[in-house]
Length: 288
Image (cartoon, rainbow, N blue to C red; front, side):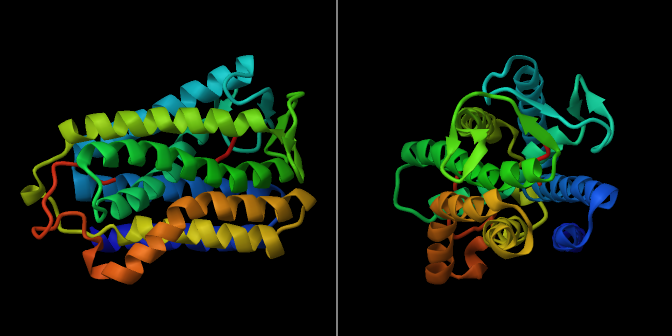
């Protein structure tokens, strides 16, 4: 099963590498493939490392709340701002929202959650503080991911913003309300996953021993690879700015993760470890 997770992660990375090399309908297919592969990797890894119940809870929380937020958002402009999806490009839709979009919330959330949890489980903070930090930092990481994602998808024409709210310097086409909406939505997801995760967590003695290396690599790839792609490989003036914004926002998670790796080593990335028992669980391309 560990090999299957690695295969899914590798396929997702290869699909992302192909993104700048294709155009038109082929790029749409690649976009959907990236999301499906990343979401599948997240759910399979979560099921193996944390239990099937935990994985189902993750999917219901991220994909379910993500779909609700998108349906409400496209209909009312809340909580992100006014926007609409292009038609006929990303497959079938659910009330005007491409069906692949909820999977993107799962695909983006899980690697960030694992990265934040990896750092916090090796910190000296109390369990209560860890839970608060996990929710807040995960939400910040999701905003950083969307700074990459929204700009890339808007540049590709996958959705269009019609909100009169101003955007960030260099990215005027996306209102700042979008990032606030992402922070709130992701924080709610993180709070639910943190709260319910302890109930759905399987007995670790019954789980397959598998490290969190795959989601941590996917997080790092997304953080650094997206910055490179936006800065040099993709075409669009706003992408040069999103490369910087996304790099620093996701760096709120990425820098502590890199430091923790450097000081504790990859060997300690295993979630289930007898040396450090804990009752806490660990942890579009969003297409909107």
